[in-house]
Length: 223
Length: 56
Length: 252
Image (cartoon, rainbow over all chains, first blue to last red):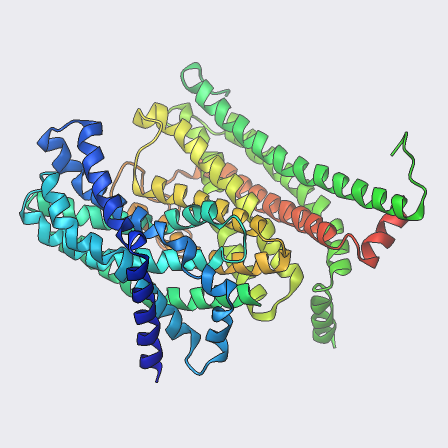
């Protein structure tokens, strides 16, 4: 039953995203506008671009995940659906996880799929592409989880968007450090295992603890 | 032994920042308390009709 | 019998008027203690302690840099404990105390970063380095600012306090990162020289007393400022309630 409720919520979110069309393309547009603007801004030298490529792709992924946060829970709060999460038979925590998963599918998966192409446009060595994708796979769920927490915390305020980025930024610093560390190490022919291991540990920590905090924050905000 | 000349500026600036921030931590609550109390008194005066325009 | 009296009095602290009175009595004493300890500490730090053989006089910055750094972290731990109490037992005075800690903690984090920067300039030759400890301290500052911003953004103060308490608990992960950053990553910032529990401190004895005095001073000041701010918040939120009106009527 719980799985059915969760998959129903995910299916609904995905359907909404597809029907909104333009909005679901935003993360990709964002990624590629960053990738195209960077060479214009810092000059087209391959060495420089390859050095900053991991950081740029990661910053693009972070900003793309921030874009959709404002409306992660707000429409549901306004039409009363959110309260139903606590009344229904399905535990609210599971629905929170489902909502965060669909946020990740919509904002992060397109970025992960196109990241190798973007990295090639920035001359990142081909050996590092696998690690880049792996770091994105491990790291972007943390971005969605932390972003979801920030969205839940600011739900009751009316100037959420400024606060959102202030809250997200300090909490995702470790993710950015380890992820770009992993990709840079791979690009320099070093082992990226230590960095990826830390990233995995962060992901496990975030998956276990953040949904609890998120549902507690949502609960307080609908009281 | 007062800090010698080479480093004096760094040391004194640090201690100055410390003093300024601590002083602000002391003063800000006092000022806020005074402001809140004045507001409460003003509200009360408005309610009881003893509000004095010239000398609130 | 005595235990029961203590318990009853402790529970009374949950009542705003009682808490207000206690804070009013306690705060001047804490400020007095701060001034006394800081006077001794500063005198020793600036006049008694001999210059370091490597760093000459610039190490005197340590006596405000280190206590502030400790207090920035300890203050966060205090807030986290208060946040747990506030979320579990929903005591309003505790919620307010937890929120009152944020600006003071932010102030100490700022002192720590600013003095560290001033110390780094002559010693490392740079104002700032993207070193693990410096970065995590900067992150702590942003967490403090986030807590203050979140609390201020809510119309309903109690709801804001409780939501911000959740953020405090989430931010706790940063504290061990700051503490161990100098041991996990070897970078520009030196390792810990003071050890309370294991092994010997690598600092010379003659340098210790001012550090101890300044640390105590800063702790007392944190307590005093916390009570002052919590008292103001109570006054602000309860301004329409009887006890505030009565208290002000008395004073006028």
